[in-house]
Length: 273
Image 1 (cartoon, rainbow, N blue to C red):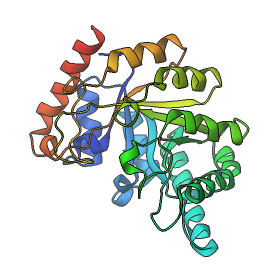
Image 2: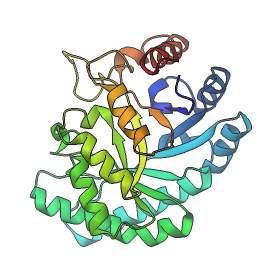
Image 3: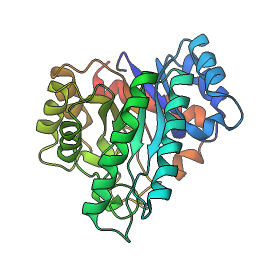
Image 4: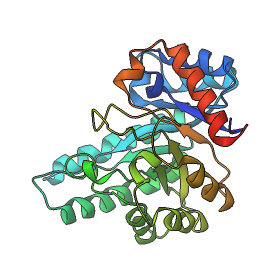
């Protein structure tokens, strides 16, 4: 197992946030990434403290973003919601807020992308004041219609450059979304060299897949070259966590203790420890 492995609570969705904390800690996991719905029953501050009391580091919060909208009033509401997400990240002790940036089919991709850059720019000062990095997550091109118009590491690097490599903007690289890209390793190196690489997420691509959103594989269950990508990230100087983020109706229907143990076993095989 990598020495700094973190799990997203969505990976073991049937468990409550407190069950996730308990099970991850007992299994020897080092970190946890919360999702904003985890705060429906417990405040961000209390949930973050519960994780730290159990020996877990809060690595990220998912998700903010969703910036494109047709009217200024709607975009203003989206900015307010992202300010709230930034506050939640700070309250739970997460250093990064992952951004799923959004897209709309009633606007051009160029317009969507412009509004994404403008929206992130509007949030930067508040993020800096709260000590939170806004981590742009490039999504697979199959999601360019409604989930994100940011679809490659190269374009995420471009946004960071446009925003002056601001201290509160970075990139969350998820192998499920980026593994296919022939320029991935080069763009990862570029992001790390610029100080913009904030988070690293792993899962696997099952072939064939039965659902484009909810049929991810556990690491080691598919065709993504996780070790090769991880080695490039490590060799380039990134010292952060390796975060497990799996959306899977199949795995959510299984006993979650078995899923957790399989993740640990598979990661040990992938990383040779």
